[in-house]
Length: 279
Image (cartoon, rainbow, N blue to C red; front, side, top):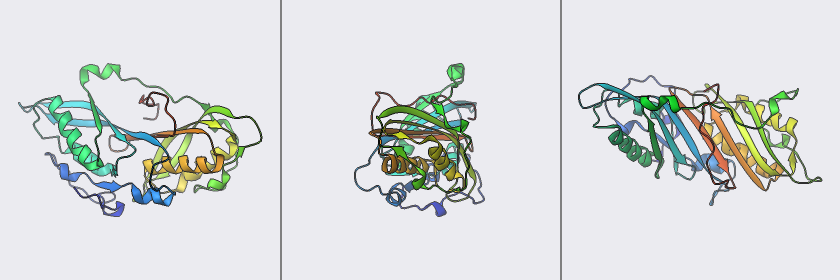
């Protein structure tokens, strides 16, 4: 599977005939490197983290031809060489619709193999079967809500110069939250909606300017993962926190949601994968 794909060559924005039988070749990997170079990342990554994908439209046939359904969660390390373009991911999952698979365990292994090949390194796969749907919980990200602030907005593209911190006062530890993140698909320009949580230890970040900066993504074209990495790098450069994590929960499209998390410190656990009200 090639890893030299460019976004404009992906299935995005193009008429599609759905393939209902197993076709791993539908996956369209895009290297992370080019967009990272745009924001000044070269060599060792200044963060670690994961992209958490949740799939709500997964179905296949058992060996007797009876349809099966499940929810799926895919956990992708941030240091994989590639992302997978989301429409191709959807088309790939739909290729199982008329495919007979011996068991959920066999399906999980097929998914794990194909996606690890596409992303370029191992990914984790978890299936939640119907008998366990009742265990799926919902919840909201924690944090002080920036959206309460009555700000004036004049820019709708990200401007790192808006970000400010108080370097004269004592170090603080804060968790800040906004539901006003909106960006657009890199290829089609279709809107992507999300909530973003920012945890940091460092000089206190000016909240009004941070909210203006986040709203500035409103006309910005970039994939989810790339937006979160841009936010991380801009805050690190402008505000110089000692510790920083940025976690975005995006609403689903095509039965998939993508939730990137980037951090430079460990808390001993990954962020919660609970669905929020908009997901």
